[in-house]
Amino acid sequence: MWWRFGETQIHVDPGPGALVRALSHVPPCEPARLDAIVLSHKHLDHSGDVNVMIEAMSQGGWRPRGMVLAPRDAFEGEPVIFPYLRRFVPRMEHLREHGGPYLVGEVEIRASVRHKHAVETYGLHVLHRHDEGEVRLSYVPCTRYFDGLIEDYAAARPDVLVVNVLRYRDTMDVDHLTFDQAKDVIAQVRPRVAVLTHFGTRMLEQDPRRLALALEDELGIRVHAARDGWTLDFATELA
Image 1 (cartoon, rainbow, N blue to C red):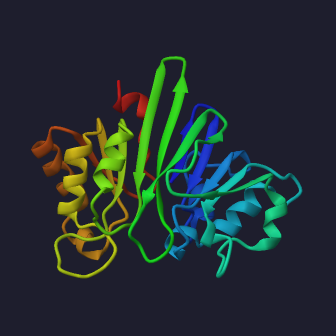
Image 2 (tube, rainbow, N blue to C red):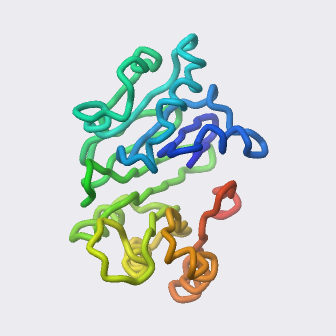
C-alpha cells in the first residue's frame, strides 16, 4: 500500500514486486519521494521488496532519506532488512506494542496491540491533521482473531479501516481472519469506510467485490474490495 497524506508519502508492507508496481502505476509512485517505509511484520509477502524500496527511496544510498519502521525481529535474529542499508536511512525505529506516536512528516503512527501471528506483528493507527480537520486510518494486518483485537481498533476511532482477509469460510487452524471474523471487526469498530484486502484463493473465488457490496448492505457502512492499482480517495469517500 502506498499512502499519501498531504505531502507525506508512506509505503506499507512492500512485498514482492512492490517497486515494479509502484513505477508502473499511473501516475507513477516515486520511491525517491517516500518519507517512510513501514512493515507490519517480516513475512515475505509483506517484506519481499523492502530492501529494494530502501535502495530506491535513498537513491542507492547517495541521498539518505526517510524512515524505516518495523518490528524488532525484522532487524534482528533472521532479519529481512539488510544491515548495510541502515546507513541509507536517517531513522530506523522498532515498531512495538502500543508504541508511538512515530512522527512521519504530517502524520502520526501508533502501533496496535500485538497480533496473534507466527512472527512479531502489529497493526497501524494513523492520524493526519490538516487544514480541514483530521483523518484517522487503521490497518489490520495478518492475525488470528483474539480477545482484545476489536477493542484496540475501536479505541482508535478510524474513519477508514483496512482489513486483511485471507480466508473465506473454513476450519483451518491458521493465523488469519476469515470473512465472517472480518465482518465482526468492521461491524463493531464502525469506521465510515472499510477496505478488504490480502485475499486468499477461496476469497478470490467468491468475488471480493460482490462480498464487499453484500457487507455494505448488511452493515450500512461503505465497503470496498481492494485490487491491484486501485486508489482510494479519502477526500471523496469521507466528504
